[in-house]
Amino acid sequence: MQKKVICILLLLLLLGGIAVAERKVFITAETTRYLKDDIIRFEGGVEIRYEDMFVTALTGEFDSEEEELLLKENVEATQDKNRIKSPEMWMNLDEEHIIFRGGRVESLFYFQQEEEGEEVPVEMWSDTLEIWQQRGEMLAKGDVKAYYDDMDMEADEVLIEEEKDLLTATGNVYVLRDDGSWFRAEKVEYNMEDGTFVAYRMESEFELRENP
Amino acid sequence: MISGNKKWLIFLLVVLIIALGAGIFWYFQPRDFVLPIGEEEEISFHFRLAGNEVVGWSRGEMVWRIKVQTIVDPERERSGKMGERLILKDIEEGYFYRDGEVFFTFSVEEAHYHTRSEDLNLFGFRMETPGGDWMESDEMIYIKADEILRSPGQVIGKVGRTDIEAERMIVLLEENEIIFEGGVEMIHRLEVE
Image 1 (cartoon, each protein chain N blue to C red):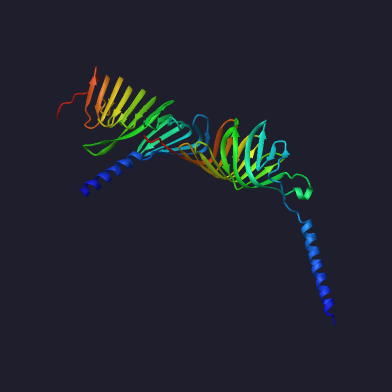
Image 2 (cartoon, chains in turn orange, red):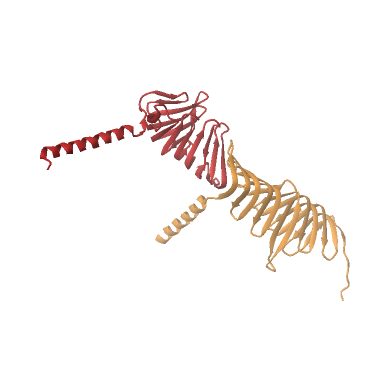
């Protein structure tokens, strides 16, 4: 009985600790202006640290009431080895929803290949890049170009779902592999774990080789 | 040989001379003039002493008010005229106003009021707003001509859910804007659900 009570108390303490755990955003800048309506504006050498994410920019604005952050000019975000460069970054800290925009967005992500245990980089360029941290999803839109493993990809949109190890490219998809083979499709689903494709409405060119 | 009476006479003379010298020295010694607290006195057009409170005005509106026990005018005794710097000591509490309402209250170790510029230097400054925000700095200067509060040195404080530290600070009173300068460090706590 005594053990039961101790276990329950420990569980309550643990749950209580999780419930009150504070999430903090660390901000440094050369100059900071507190404006009306809870708006804070940063100028010069802006650095933001939030959990394992580190972002630098030249200027920025933070709505402390809505918990929305807007960074501008030479935005560079890093999280572990992942890196994104963009002219502008918007982030809702509460929902952990991020949008990189304002020009070409250059990103580099590393995905773990479960079978081989290797980290394979995905290099990507797009007009916007939207990230939902909690869902582990990212959506690149507008003239997307990506380089992954042995292939170059172009598409209107690319959605990466980390949990499913799935990359879905839609709209004018063009894939060129290192061996020179290529295909076009309206939609391509690429399994990043085993390297298999599912292509919809596909047109392709590849070389057939005889087995020696 | 000097007789006993003469000895006493010389002793008394010496004591008298010392006392007279001390008196003259004390009389000509420059000393602070303490304003009569508790009486109403129009010190300047924009600075009025009423009871134990001094009040600063700008454009017909009260800007600040300080409850004080001692006001020293170091220059008054020398020139016989009001000095350009009054020292406010034993301050109980101070208030800054905006639109007729308390903007923030402050505690301060000592304040210097400049009668010509009507500026106010607040030493050992700590402010608190009704909403729980606070700010501390070694010196805060109210510059009347610019309607600003300026901290030339380090400030620390809390605004909303944000802790702040900076090398300097300026408060634009009319614009309701606070500017932190030089290595600004902030820690914002996100709302806990």
